[in-house]
Length: 358
Ligand SMILES: *[C@@H]1O[C@H](CO)[C@@H](O)[C@H](O)[C@H]1NC(C)=O
Ligand SMILES: *[C@@H]1O[C@H](CO)[C@@H](O)[C@H](O)[C@H]1NC(C)=O
Ligand SMILES: *[C@@H]1O[C@H](CO)[C@@H](O)[C@H](O)[C@H]1NC(C)=O
Ligand SMILES: *[C@@H]1O[C@H](CO)[C@@H](O)[C@H](O)[C@H]1NC(C)=O
Ligand SMILES: *[C@@H]1O[C@H](CO)[C@@H](O)[C@H](O)[C@H]1NC(C)=O
Ligand SMILES: *[C@@H]1O[C@H](CO)[C@@H](O)[C@H](O)[C@H]1NC(C)=O
Ligand SMILES: *[C@@H]1O[C@H](CO)[C@@H](O)[C@H](O)[C@H]1NC(C)=O
Image (cartoon, rainbow, N blue to C red):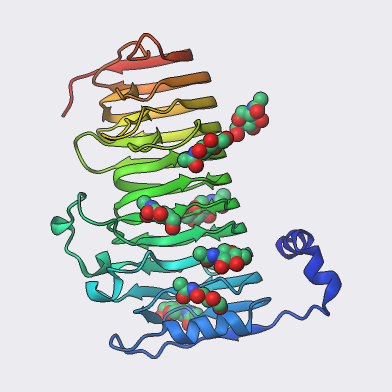
């Protein structure tokens, strides 16, 4: 059934080629000093329209990025463990460990529900991670107009930076059944992307579960749990704009966050209008059509909704907060910080108890 759906999306490939689905099975070299990535990449190329299987009960050492750019209607089944090399020198100049640039119709999943990706903190001790340093590599980077990317039933652990970075015109990207065994820095970073769906996830993060940056639209997070494990200044769902000069109007549109449990001492929904960043003029920023509904909060959270101060003029329209329940430390009115901003916020069925923080 899944295959049928997938093939419809890549009808061009089916009609121009005799379609034979190859299977490539990669066995681990079984040596933590040897890189399994070249063999996996070569299987991904050979089976670019087929299935590459990493069998269960095997650990694959990854010292260089996996590259899914050749994939066209491919499956990558991760049934074993991908263990990233704990040698920071191998990772410090890489944008990501698993790169999905300009890829069409890829399914990355664990057929047996056993797949685990251990990023081993990219060889960096978490305590040493200084956020003002260079951006840490992300675990997955989905860029350059990738289309129809499905990632499902995988577990991740020891991801120090962003686990999933979805950018640069990518669209129709679905993350189903992803469990963050322990905290990543940020779960999802979405920027310049459309139609991104996160469903049935358990996201654990120290910074932010899902951060949405311009120019992104139709981003939906449903039936998921967001657990923030750090104690100060963190956010569950952040709708943000860069602190730097940009040309024109930056926007975020059509956001739905539904049936979500938010656990931990966080601001559950954060609007970050951003600042001009020293040089340059403030740029107008706009958020249109965002709905947060059926949000259950425990921890307690700091606040359910925080509109941060920023220099950029903010227009927020058609924003609704429905059925928020649980415990917060503060339950202030949700409003703009500056008189010239526009904030059309609607709250319905708001049942939050104010309790002291732990
Ligand atoms: C993995 O090991 C478990 C326990 O030893 C076994 O039940 C299972 O069949 C193995 N799976 C594979 C794919 O070999
Ligand atoms: C990924 O593979 C494609 C072709 O297979 C190549 O052009 C590209 O440079 C590779 N990217 C990386 C980051 O290795
Ligand atoms: C992006 O994709 C296009 C077409 O698929 C390709 O020509 C270009 O080299 C890719 N750029 C990067 C940075 O991967
Ligand atoms: C996400 O990917 C984009 C494009 O490759 C990159 O510029 C950005 O720094 C990445 N962001 C994070 C948080 O990894
Ligand atoms: C939801 O995800 C979990 C893994 O986190 C998986 O075990 C479960 O089967 C998924 N539920 C559904 C309905 O797919
Ligand atoms: C977002 O799109 C608008 C046009 O709709 C453009 O003016 C603006 O520069 C874009 N912002 C970014 C950060 O690319
Ligand atoms: C508002 O956003 C939701 C969620 O992405 C979308 O389903 C809906 O069509 C949008 N409404 C309008 C009027 O664009």
